[in-house]
Amino acid sequence: MLSFLTKRLAQLVPTLFFVSILIFSLQHLLPGDPALVMAGEERDPAVIEKIRQQYRLDRPIPVQYFYWVKGVVSGDFGESLRIKVPVLELIEQKLPVTIQLGSMAIVIAFLIGIPAGIVSAVKKGTAWDYGANLFALWGISTPNFWLGIMLIFLFSIKLGWLPASGYVPLSENWRASLASTIMPAFVLGNAIAAILMRHTRSAMLQVLESDYVRTARAKGLFCKLIVDAVFNRDYAVVQGVVLVTATVYIMLNLIADIAYILVNPRLRA
Amino acid sequence: MTDATLGAIQIATDDELESPARRALRRLFRRKGAVVGLVVIAVFILLALFAPVIAPYDPVATSWSLVRKPPSALHWFGTDDLGRDILSRVIYGARASLMAGAISVGIALGIGVPFGLLSGYRGGFIDALISRITDAMLACPFLILAIALAAFLGPSLGNAMIAIGITTTPIFVRLTRGQTMSVKVEDYVEAARAMGNPRWRIALFHILPNIMPALLVQATLSIAAAIIAEAALSFLGLGQQPPAPSWGSMLNAAQRFLSNAPWMALWPGLGIFLVVLSFNLVGDGLRDALDPRAR
Image (cartoon, rainbow over all chains, first blue to last red):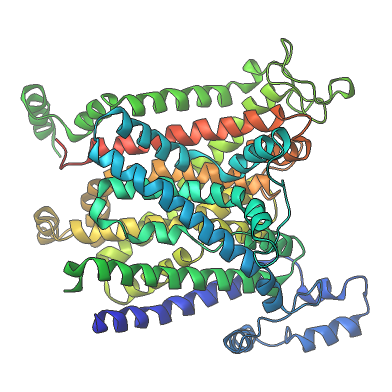
């Protein structure tokens, strides 16, 4: 177990290194000069040159990479070019929503996916099995942004049971908080449930296979944050969000692998 | 292979031994889900190809007197916020979706398979390098990476396809690598090597044909994922640009009029769902049909 852990942790290093290279190089794929973007309306070459120096944009790319990694390791993801707020702060703002949505989605996925998978495996070849398989196919094939729109139409507009947008923190009012997150959590959970059901069915004993934990990825509101940032050429935000998401993702995979070994001792050899 | 050996196989097929491809097809057609999927895909391909003939109206023609009209005899799927016929836009939208599915998976195969072959066959440092890069790309969530790439390249359908293609590539690198590693120790590859065939020849003519089934299954399932990804990118404004129709961008427009024109959201979503479902059905069917363990 210990040697496995050491090996698995050692593998993380090159992976994280390449992830950081990948994310850093995204900036240089981006059309447009960041110094010009930051200067905004200002077209004075002296100002632009000053910005270039301040953000080290005039230095060689490896040097820029070094400073970026140095910052990231100490928790400094830079500053949003547009709204002048530290990237870490932006991520922290969205993190509670992402975590709440992610955990609720996982709970929903477990509640639907595992019973459906067990029933389908136990009653193999019956209408139950057929129905559960149809459900899995539907879950995998439905684009979640469409399912979201349809649920808003039904539960917010037609029935008026749930709010169509907005977020209430759990600490403020748990009922309102649940009401504001249950639809997106269900949309995310539904897709995971489908994959979970298939895994449960094909190997009821190997429930904790890693693939679906991988699916419980940290997305949620990050998607919106990154799209806005990308449209605004806000490099620091894009890099920060992708890096945090990728790291969380890698850690979840590691946890999944460890959990897999814990429940299945045969793999320890 | 000489004509004589081909002939021998032909005779054997009629007897008891079928060619693997024909056996797979026969088994595929026995599966109802896969057949339904194939039929639906065929229908959508025909719709996309003959859209100008089939679509009742011009998909980009606006009309102020027809803004957000519910489905009727004249406009079966209703009209959108600019008075355009939704049925015609859904038919034309099939072009963007199917093209995105095919081209982005084509890109992923075109890059992923050669690198996977190289990685799996050569091993050593090249393998380690390619594998770490693959790991790094797989470590970033699929959609987030696609969004970032698409945005960096600039919003257009072509760039969205490139972004999805690149994001899908590591899946094929990893699959090809794994398959290559298991096939390269087989006797027939050893034999080919003993006969002095160059490496590229062994990779292309002895390994590649034998890992085709796995690639075919993954490609089919990846097309389904690519179609959803294209719709998602267009939904976010990073794919097909207006006024050209795409199912994703139609959904984006629809969410603003959900309370008074819900039909705008129904049809494009149904289109995505049906096509993606069909590719998943065919992919599942192919997997079962090509599985040598299940005779």
